[in-house]
Image (cartoon, one colour):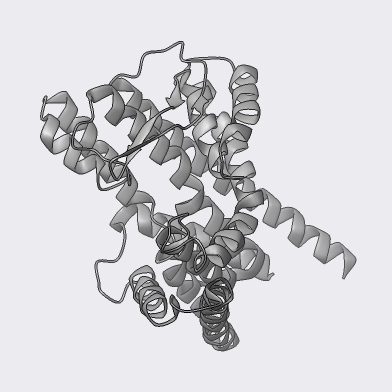
Length: 324
């Protein structure tokens, strides 16, 4: 029965995000997590054994927060099933971030359509870490599509999958680890040692979600009508392995394959040009309409992913019912 409660809660959470976006408050779960991660980083990212201090300062708080959420959920579900589902939905709402990405992409599209290049660059800077001050129209489209491809798993489908498996506690644990990786999981002199643990844990947690998400993404090929499904599938699984990350390449490669465009390539970060692999065959030019297709891929993927979770949850419930 709990698996149906979890899938109901995550569906409600998705609808809340779709309707209202992220809760605008300094008490937003991810904001609080970020403050905690920053505080621990200032306290412990110095001296010797930074790798182990970073691992402990990431893992212990994440587990502690998950345990607190577990206790709240246990009480809520004990009082009444509906109360538990509603509380879980509210917590999960704070763990996913779909509408904010859609809003940014829509703003970039509108600015480019109106030839407001400076405004488009400023909006692009809200969703990527690369230098955007000199980006061309094509480069902004590429950056936006890459961001959609990578964030669809990190921001929405991965926390949903973990919510299905372990409810709000596991989803919150995932969000803490993913936020830690986003803040300190860089290969720089400051973070390479301290953020090692966060990066490795995030890699492990995203191994399965990234691949399931990429597979769901390829189903959008029938709505975009830019290529055949088999070609998109081949590009996804062949080109994803070129990425230095074991997971991030799947979303980007899937987006490139579905839209039949070429993503990746040399990119400037903090004044330094970094050689990145190319994804996709690039038979289609990167232009403004690609952004609308990218948003269509996002929406179709999430609908299909939720359907997949309901099917998985239903099969699990039936199996448990038969075995009991």
